[in-house]
Length: 518
Image (cartoon, rainbow, N blue to C red; front, top):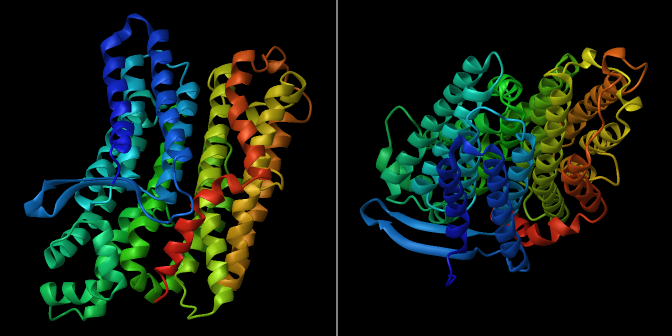
């Protein structure tokens, strides 16, 4: 237990900021923007405080707060973080200032827009720290509200259908997940995620479910798989996993660029976090039973999304499919880690490598994808809203700094050694080739497609003869360069010294993998 409620303070801080922004009103839009940025930086400072005071040698939960809330329902106010939770807090604290900077040009309903951004930040903090399902589900669902309105009110011409599709898909998944956990509660009278995981690992959870909820048409194994399917659907839609991904391209392309930064940088990680925090510990045995279909779905997510990106002409849709592709690698590694390997120490070490790769890739994808969508926002600002591959050409001649910095982000997405995107993918493939060679081999096709469309962007947007229409396009201003510098610099730092992240999460990874030794 901690004597000071740091995590509660971190969660409440953006809510307070949202209220302040609404109170400021439309009188001074610049004051609203700077205030939103100030609150986001305050949250980043508090997150860094937690980072530097976190005991990385321990895989235990830290900064824990535990208070009775609704005893009759087994609901406690329980928040804490381990290496995984701390990493999620940091990536959220980094991506929100990027989203605010990418939204600086917003002119309509400015206080409401930035208040919704801060409210979404609070929901993300809650999702990544709460350890009781009842409380966790509240934050999971509340996050949909600001995301929906950010798309619906400030999005592109097809924002109505995109926001509706986003809400319907995620709500259907959430309902299935809620039904699964209500079944677990009826059998165990527990909502605590740590307690449920402990029961699953000791072999007590599913017998308790069968004893309470057995139905003559379902065998115990079928009942367990049914509950797993409900929880799985809720998380798979959020990542998203093929074939539950069709909401994402339209949502990303129609959302304002700042909201897209939040969707790809933080909200997609909610699904991966839930796989790691909830699905693996509680339903690991069921995942093992359907491992081959799960691996095929992950391979399809990696390969099909990469080749679909090749057919796109809109930069935001290209990066949307690229996001699905990169998160597919994380899902592949998560599923591969479930494979039964007995007491083979060598394969256990490969599981450690793959899982470290997942956590590093989650952070690196957040940084790189958020920066790329920020560049798209800057390009739209200069071109009057255009963002098609065929709308430009030769921009390196008039905007060399813009070209160079965006090129760094593109090569990071490609996984160029020396940049942050390389190490995470390397660790994932290192582990996967030993654990599931066929899935790793097929997924290499996704790397090939990624190389083609990234080089295509560099060639068609920045190289070749200059389109006369853009002969007067301005390069990045000093302020824009200064704002982008930390993100670009962090790509190099993590590419050369990934231990900055791995050193913090390694103990958590070891504990997670050890709990999966069936």
